[in-house]
Image 1 (cartoon, rainbow, N blue to C red):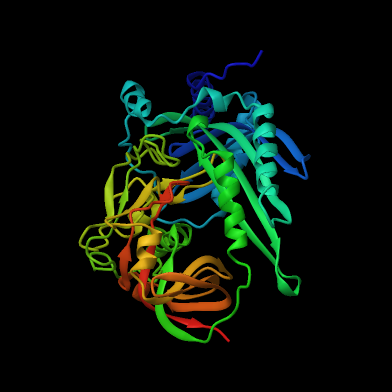
Image 2: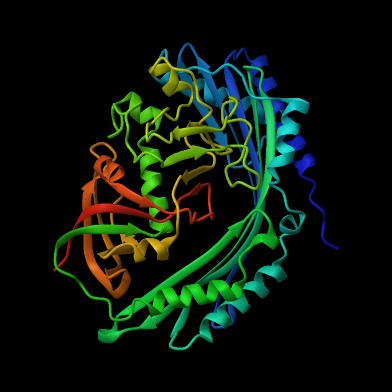
Length: 466
């Protein structure tokens, strides 16, 4: 009989561990510290040629303590949890020892606790719908059956030579935080996924691949395997006969997956830590228009079933729904943890993110790019000549200068239709100018993650080819 996992019990146990370590730190004279603790488990399956390639079932526990003494930070983490007072003392003393070796800074501070706790926290957690008992069962049989069926569907597609990276997973996790600023809270969630790739042979012994996947908090919300197989196969088959094109300047369309990567770089540029060091191309752009009016980046940390949903950040600061870039295209905020906020003489924004055994740093919860209309096909149809990008390679943008140069492949567009697949091209530009150059966006959000973006079109970009 499958053991039922109780998320409330997981959260309570994680908080007890964090509380005990915090109490030890206080007993040893530490006045400013916080403790993070995490626990999780997962089952992962990958298959090839209808045989199990990899099958693993794992569990993880980890915790960390950060101490701040006279502006000096010390951090100690274990890939487990301390089992007794002696081990807790060892963790605290290690963190204290490291703090004495570090450089003091007035910006090393703990924030004021503003997030809900106790019953108020539970009232905010309940509507988030992050826990699926079916996923928490971590059924090996389900993962095997789904992966096998997905691979079979891929291989039954005409002209597919082999499958690639076919797998399924289920898992759960819990995160707890206790701080000397008075905060204590925990949350838990489940995730599941199903993914598969297809490979075809092209002229000149070239291999063309296509990949598709689905991920969700809830098992019943996953995309069907038949649909995944079809999309993966088509993404591979559509690349047959890909060729280079001459260098040019044309409108360039990013499909939702590529757009997600672009806006991920935009959000990295809003990192308060980088801003405080002027190490981002957006450091002086707050309150400036950086997107076309009508488009906005909206963050909702309390989104139901969201991958990044949480009522509190990694330092016990309340999270709030807000426009990061508003409908006028103005950037309204930086992404701050306590340290970066203090450096810039601003208030923490609830964007501290941390793992169960790591220091906090700025990050997002759930962000959506909103304000567009239409989908990939309608935007292609509205483009008389241009380039559709479906894959990017090479280095990420230079976040200090904003220089953007990526290898790409996709499709050439003529008269509002895909004319032929293209490869061996490079797209170049300036991130800030590219943002201002977006002249069309859809509402076809790719919902498989905490950052969700639609199809976007840049009015004109430089494309280097043969």
